[in-house]
Amino acid sequence: MLIIGERLNTSRKQFREMFENRDQNLDAIRALIKSQVDAGANYLDVNVGTRVTTEVEDLVWLAKFTQETVNIPLSIDTPNPKAAEEALKVHKGRPIINSISLEEKRYNGMISLVKQYKAGVIALCLDDVGMPETVEDKVKNAKRLVERLNKDGVNNEDIYLDPLVQPISTDTKFALQTVEAIKQIREMFPDVHISCGVSNVSYGLPKRLFINQAFIVMCIAAGMDTGIIDPNDEVTMRNIWATEALTDKDPFCAQWLELFRAGKLGA
Amino acid sequence: MKILDDIKQAVIKGDIKVEKKTADLVKEALDQKIPVKDVLEKGLIAGMAYIGDKFKKNEVYVPEVLIAARAMKSGMAIIKPLLAASKIQPKGTVVIGTVKGDLHDIGKNLVAMMLEGAGFNVIDVGIDVDPAKFVDAAKSNNGQVIAMSALLTTTMPQMKNVVDAVLSSDIKGKVKTIIGGAPVTQKYADEIKADGFAPDAASAVDKVNELIKMN
Image (cartoon, rainbow over the protein chains, first blue to last red):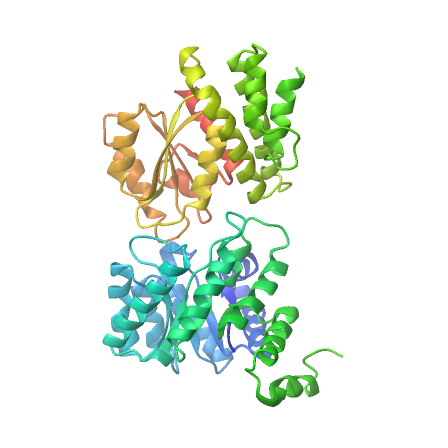
């Protein structure tokens, strides 16, 4: 399972407050960066989208600062090609660009950067028509995305399909539809990555974290192999590792045992 | 009156685990010759107002709002023809939509339901809506308020385009604008000269009431 740490995002209250007075909070930001990597993040997502007027320079600052703190690639999280471009210029290693979709403007704005930096790319299964709600539409959009990205020279191993999930508070079929879409996409494309913005599933309900924790398990069991999550949530991480062991993704349970011996599963 | 309170309670419970459903209670009330206005205001709207208030305080959640709105609609369907006949006017007409480039509809739908629940005539123009379409819908429906939703920082600037379109058209001064959505703030509303901002669906109803009184 590939873990993309989600906490460096100014739409999250804690980080927004840190970032607003960042000169006074450098140590706290550094600690937030390090703790995610220590907890097992393979990538760190950086998103300053709420800072509309200063997004470009802020994203560059955050990308730089993060990679000065830890030696890890980033997920450059912005719909704004200009912000992505500037952040990619200072980025070291192979980034993930988060994200493109089948929306013409968005696809065309980002694809040249994906090619130029040989980046991984998170591809949202939506088009100009709208959010896909049915399994059929999600899978159809996934197929269109893979075909189009392949044509543009992006290999399946660099594609992270996001089938999208709508909140179960508005229709209790939504989670299952995403799970089923993950299953079908996995069968169709054994070598693409599948990622999902899991936390959307719990919008509009209390105690969202518990629902998210359960939903991640369902998604992994269906074939999701990448999660944009909070790696500092121990329950989430333990559930991920346990589910990998339970679904034949952890040969000889070697990872589980290694984590146990390293004390990462608790006493 | 007990039957009116029963209607209110049925709406609040969203017709789940109730002895009689909203629609049946509304029919009963009308059979008892209770004025349509009372059925609407003391029954249906009262129930939805209760839910709206609880929602604002985080005491009820999205699914509960949705089933309450569904129950209210089932009652509205029965009294709608009678409302026209008895010349009861809606409180006002609100054109609502999600701005250009933005495909999110959950928040917009919640606000629309709350407004309907509060007795407004609601014209839902959908998602990914052009500024011109907002203005046209307000004109052709005699709307008093245009309500806009944006969930993305990238589509938020479209709200300014709608406000500008209103201010440069002949509905300037007649139609108020109100905005909302996760990244939207009062400060932003002030910046783009929108007439109002609401942080949640129930507050949106209060704000629209306020704006319509100003007209």
